[in-house]
Image (cartoon, rainbow, N blue to C red):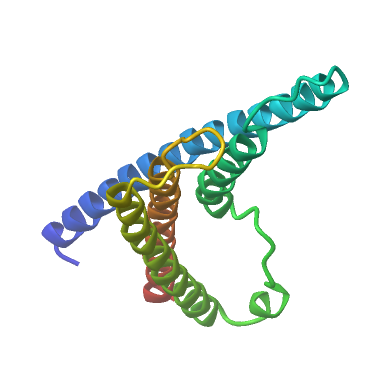
Amino acid sequence: MKKSDSMYSFIKTVRMTALKKYVLLAAEKLDLIASAAIVAMMSLTCADVILRMFRRPIPGAYELVSFLGAIAVSFSIAHTSAERAHVAVSLLVRMLPSRIQGIVEASVALLSLVLFGLISWQCLVYGNDCRLNGEVSLTLGIPLYPVIYGVAFGASVVCLVQMVDLINAIETVRQS
């Protein structure tokens, strides 16, 4: 291997490490927002239940909890994927040679990248339609498109996580 090849490999590794660091940081920040949304959902629901005992329910509580739920789910998926905290069937894959494991991981990452790319794109399309049509929630009149754009953003960060996983899997295949 030439000196220039090792320098190129070093620079590529540094860039990949920096990309991975920023993607993981974005996923962690979104997970914090998702956690705050869950706390807000819980607080709002508890307050609504207590106030209903006094015949003073919170108007639009159901809508707000729905919006917060959409944010909580869509913003937590990227961190879950990055930490590999989701349910995975890997017992069979672990018994395969490392090259085949890399191919399986690359295939899963590529399919996930395509799926979440489509989700992000379609949420942008749908959010734009809702914005142009002025669609709002029934009780509080809150515009729907910011929440839909939030779901699209969460899905796009999942795409970045899957892209990093795909690159890592390809490197695993190349090295074996």
